[in-house]
Image (cartoon, rainbow, N blue to C red; front, side, top):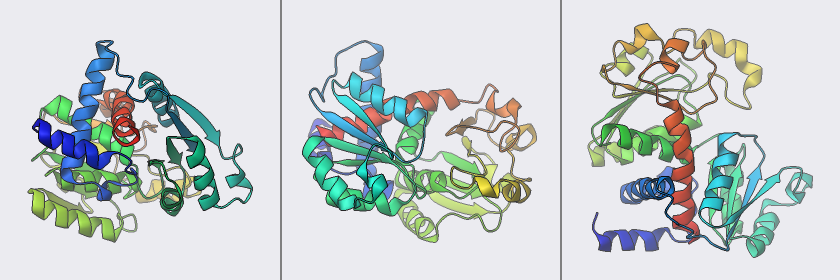
Length: 319
């Protein structure tokens, strides 16, 4: 990517919301991944990169988190700015104030807003009312920050993204939506095996297939975990009952009993496959201890890259 293209992409991203990967071009996604790698290099080398000095990020949490809160807060500090933690009990939003009024008010104080919540509609409404960039820290529909860190990690480990096969085994949830969308925009081959009744959103599938046709990738949906994982470069899973679906735990355990990633299943992936999980994980449930703690697992590398990927997003949009 030459300097002129980088400058053009940097100008496009300035002030842009980061709500879902469907809103971003392949070139913009690639730019952010490489920017994250550069910021990671600077942080490891202790090179100053306070590009957001004097700026403040408001972090709205309606869903609790370990990695999201720490990575955003530390990331803003390393970029020279400040982060404010705002729980649902700290805001009038939790007492009936409209999303529009909250967005309008916070925009007068802040340079950016990150929100981690349930309904994706709330993030969209917040962005519509805000005059500063809004970053989606997670919704029930999408988890784009996690996926930016994931594909950064794969690029670092494999040296490329285009043409690689990503196999996801489990629930067709928000992680799948963002993983599939990202893979389709990056020319990757994405396969998911999920039980009946737990498929990804139909619109996400359709858009991802259209993207893949343009980038040389592919999208496969199957009920057979072995078919999905065959010759995979990356093997991914998530908990069977995500936050907000705990009441369905027993029901889901029955539905997903044949969808555990274990030593027998990963024999069908490539020998040098990478195992990934967005965490937190339930060892012995969606993945065996032998796999998640085995030599192919890179779960903590991807967890670390949440810091660097989100720094790139913040630096690009809030500059």
